[in-house]
Image 1 (cartoon, rainbow, N blue to C red):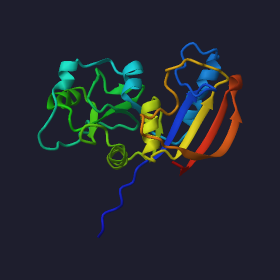
Image 2 (image 1 turned 135 degrees about the horizontal axis):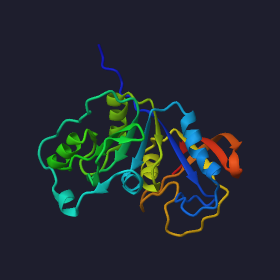
Image 3 (image 1 turned 90 degrees about the horizontal axis):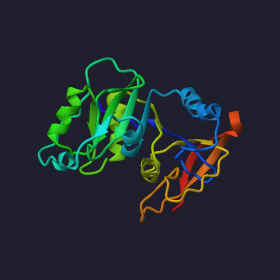
Image 4 (image 1 turned 120 degrees about the vertical axis):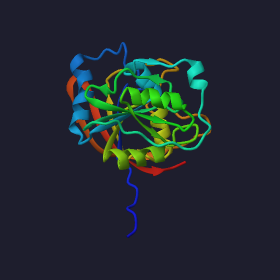
Length: 238
């Protein structure tokens, strides 16, 4: 019998952005009801998992960060096993953290089980730290997170079929560049931000000149003049 084909989750990039594509919402002249549309739309998707990058997790969810000395202690030995913490976990918060920078005091974010997505370079000490706190982890990639491999593991080991990508511009850009986003769910706020140097919806490093054609699926006007735009990711054009 042949082994089943690996199946990655369907990935929906779900974000709130200004008219000029910026995603840092602090100070925006937007009502509480307008801001609440983000969570309301999220809840409407049939998903039990979401993914953010290290910066977003550090700013909003993790309980701290490790020192540079701790991060510098890298693993150079044989491959190690992934770890799924004991217990019945029904929903998941995945944190892409290649270097193992995030320090967790809990394995739970609002009822979602925390899973660290790491590179192979993180130390045995850090993996032990995560296990002690009941934080699950996946190892994918030598020095940076191998996104296709990580998604395959997320689907295979945690049974995730629809993943909400709700990260910063860099993780969103990396997923787009790798061809791993199936849908963009964009809540467009009636705000002109204008702050130069702040993260955009998709940020790519120099040399990653990737463009995708998106097909508009639907438009819906919601509270406080927020527009909900749904796009299907179609064709890579460059």
